[in-house]
Image (cartoon, rainbow, N blue to C red; front, top):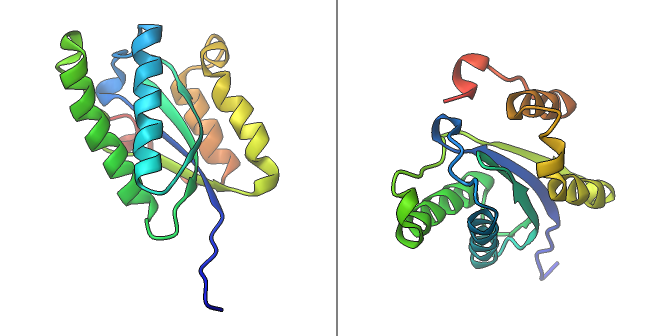
Length: 151
C-alpha cells in the first residue's frame, strides 16, 4: 500500500499546576482553547473540540500520523504556557501540571465526547475534577495512582 492512512481519536485531559483556577475569565479561557486548537493544527492533529474550566482542559482531536500522544501534549503545554504568560499580564505564574490523561476512542463515540467536552462548565457544577478524572480512568480501565495524580 503506497499510502499511510490513520484515524486515531484521542481525548486528552490535563490540569493547571496545583489545580489553581487560572482560567476563570471566560474570554481568556476561550482564547486559550482557541490557541490550543491552533497548536493541534500545527502538529497535524486537528482539534475536534476543546473545553474545560478554570483549572483543566479537555481536548478531543485526531492524532496525526507522524506524532505520538506524549509529543502532542508536550507541545500543547509548552507552547500554550509561553503564550498565556506573554498574552495575559495577570497570568504570569500560569503553568500546567506535569501529567495528563489520554484516552483513545472509536469513531462511534466521537460525537458523544464532543458534546461532553462542550458541557464542561455545566458538568462541573455537580462533579469535581478529581471525581470526573477518576470516573474517566475507570471507564477506560486505566489504573490511577492517587499518590501522583494531583500534582
